[in-house]
Image (cartoon, rainbow, N blue to C red; front, side):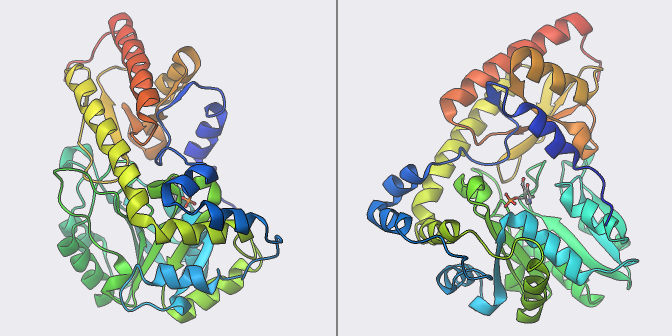
Length: 382
Ligand SMILES: Cc1ncc(COP(=O)(O)O)c(C=O)c1O
């Protein structure tokens, strides 16, 4: 398989180990294992896990973990669950087992690049379902109706959405599902940002899996819990699809990490407590971003995210976003991801999941730097 370079990942790895303020990070402030123990009161259990020999773990995920994950969906058994190396592996396996060359795939655009690049690399015809600033980064159901044909094999959605924070409501997801079913297509729903609702916004749709067997839900501990280093994600799908993906995975990563699987059980058992930490960080930082934008009226604006941890800042300067993002990282030691990585020039993607004090400092530094550039290079008339 030949595949295009993952632009955003290449950019992130250039800067993330050298900058002081990473405001491009897409998840909530990561936790240590000790913090996880303290927040959940499970220090003793974690200590005893650390005493266990590091065997290969059950290849599809331990039955304990798959039972917990199955309980997060309706009408779902452990046989419907495959634990994967992050959501990224779950997506990769689903594309590779369910799609063949020439299949038509509708993919939300912009998107986490994997969602379009892997189907393209498989030789599929990828049709973008566009979210644009002009339509307030909202999923347009009437446009999906135009894109879908009897040859459509899969509709790929992501809600809450990376990079815009758009969501699908329950009613909208029901309509997407009905349209997919009418042509016998799958709905691959990347739910990496599940549970991340935001204040004063409509409720994000429940999992695609809960709609029926054409709904494939992908989840992860990376974004909502601040545990990307655990590399635990999963897919929830019909048992035969899970089996096929599992066979494919034998050639890639074989099984989840032994410790990771056991720590993941603790995380999901204490999901509600851990989500309180996440909500508190995200809502405080979001309020700060809104204030920061208000203070820079005419220079910066955004479509307020409806969910998740990300949004796109639009700046009124004639500077390509890759150049501005590199300058910010090199000269001000702040990372904001270039909109060009998502096909949206004159935008920077911000993540508002960082540790609040650090986030505030980083926003101050970024704000001052952008204002200085604007005073030197001029602000565009709208
Ligand atoms: C929409 C989306 N899906 C999947 C992933 C990959 O997540 P994971 O760390 O679970 O592999 C990301 C990471 O940024 C993402 O934004």
